[in-house]
Length: 362
Image (tube, rainbow, N blue to C red):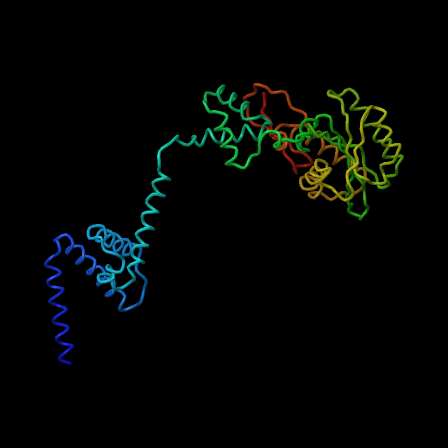
């Protein structure tokens, strides 16, 4: 016990002599380092937690400064750093230095990024056309923007848009339908149940470009000869149309016989049959059937075939001459002549008030 006390006194005297040989800055750094370790230990007594990022950074900076001023090794720093290994503190410092230079690299100067609205314009030009980078560059110069073709290429790469040869290998079906829509005619049947549960078939044609509907007729017995005769009547109405109808879209219903197709082929038209069980392939006709049911037929009780014929003629006349259509930019299939009338708004009841047509009086 006496020997232990003597050794403690002797080591204390040695530390005192050693402290006397140190500079004030060195002693200040040691005191700060010890005090920060003491604060961390006091904070973790209640609940063991790891040092925070701020505490790690503080210890790392103090240890690095002390090592730089005194030239101490990691083993010698172990006399001062007690709560963790000295090498751990030095590793924290190396990580802080790495993050500093990484952040500086990210924030380094250079050419500013292209404005967002210009970048969106480049993407739009690329998606709406099959132009190469040089062509897009020229179009931008025409619009008052000076971008190099390399900048254009970088913008397209960021948005995942491939180069021009890979971007548009062939026209899409949507593009073809848009280009030829004024030359397309579609036809179809749908059924209506009368008040006395008699099934009546409605046969119609629709021009894809204008959405104009042609009522071919209705019958409870749609045999092939009747269907062919109705097709001849419709083709008589369309004979002087410009541009001329070149394609007819129909499904694979057995009511469309060879004689039916011959009526259209004799006029130089191509008959396109839709795939089996694919109503979306004749989507314009299907969409009109939905409109006819929701706006008209679901609101009425149909008594017989003659009643249905009158209803459909009134509805189709309203549809073609008075009803704005979203698919053609709110236009009407058969546009009205615009007038300068500024009178009061007049309402015309259609089908007894189920539908209303509004116009201004002269």
